[in-house]
Image 1 (cartoon, helix red, strand yellow):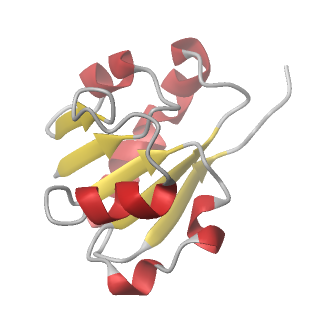
Image 2 (cartoon, one colour):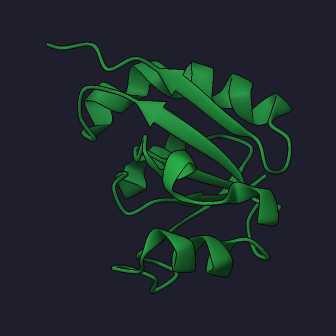
Length: 110
C-alpha cells in the first residue's frame, strides 16, 4: 500500500510499516495544508492516510475520495508510544478498503 503519514506522526514510524511504501506530508512538501486540501492532493497518489487526527473523518467528506484513513490512537505522537500500535496498524492495512475509516490503538494515559 502507498501510505501518507500525516505531519503529526514521526517519520521513523515508516520504518516499522514493513511491506508498505510510506511518505510523509513533509517529504511531499504539503506541510501546513488544511485537511481538505491535503486529502485532495493525497487521493490520487496514496491508498491510505495515516493520522493521529481523530476529528478528521468527522470534519471532511471522505465519500468523494478513494483514499482510506487510518486513525491511530495513542497517548502521544512519540515513536515509543506508537510502537505498541504497529501490529494493529499492519493488520488494519492488510484489509482496509478505499474510503474506509479505521481506528486502531487506544489513548491510554501514562
